[in-house]
Length: 124
Image 1 (cartoon, one colour):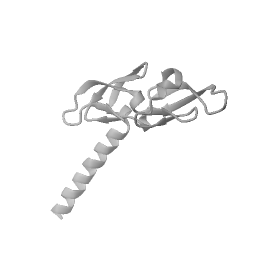
Image 2: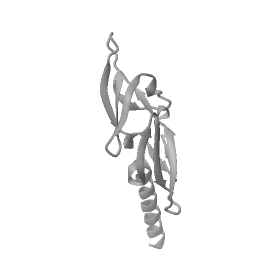
Image 3: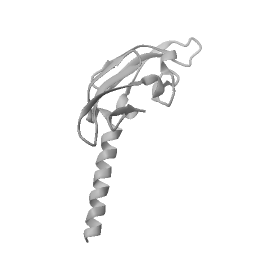
Image 4: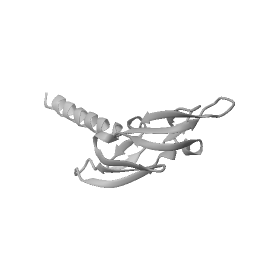
């Protein structure tokens, strides 16, 4: 029985840590964007301390035919303009679409889908 309880406790702790890392906004504050740079103060899981961290969103976002998507080294900024934070985690841009005129169309993404807090550091 004791072995079972230890395993349940370890699994619960692991689930909490995974949950915390998958939605960075749950454990980060002062979230702001400066061009393609996302800055925040994020909690370290070991000691609970907040630390300043940043990440270049070009490493995490891509433009897929006028729609912002999560994507490693997507370099979204080469085809998107006028990007701003709306609210706590909503990132909004105008990105070129795939029609013949390559018009800029409005698009947005919840950065919680693409960014995580990994021991106090923002990661894709």
